Length: 227
Image: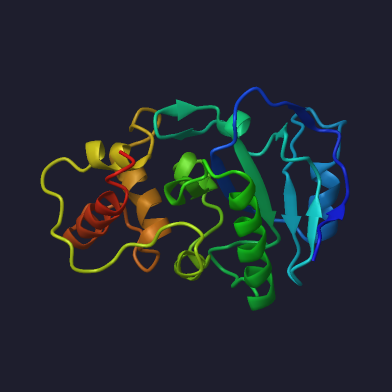
């Protein structure tokens, strides 16, 4: 199903190629989300390329060849201010730590993501991220209940395999090799917790335990050719 065109005035010229796909939850119902993301009177104007409703209907607010304002202060794989190289999808959910995502919504999201990836082959699996990955502590979306494993099983993003040997020593350099920000404005535990929210949502306590270290080790093995 083609997205419904609902243009937002909040966008800018794109100067760089797209190589990142960022997933968010709205924290507001559909109508309010669309209103906020299309409001050009706000002091902090925001937007996204797509909004995905709970029933799976997608709304396109900003063309993919334009910059939408969805990421804010952000960092991934050594780069900051990621709006310029990313596409943002806002998924309607009031709080992804508390509310599940409907099956129809996730099926539509997978289809939309795969279409975007086909149009932008520089979006490698490691570059499909949540807002919480690129803005640890400041953002928690798309939340602990977001089904990252389901997306990865359908060709969208990565998921760790069990059984890897845990990384030893300081975990922060390994997290940065994968893509996470350095612990500058946040603590090392905040970065670990952000990783866990994504890859071990059952226990996102910020402790760099053996299981967390093993999950990261496998992910680095999966992307070794890209490092």
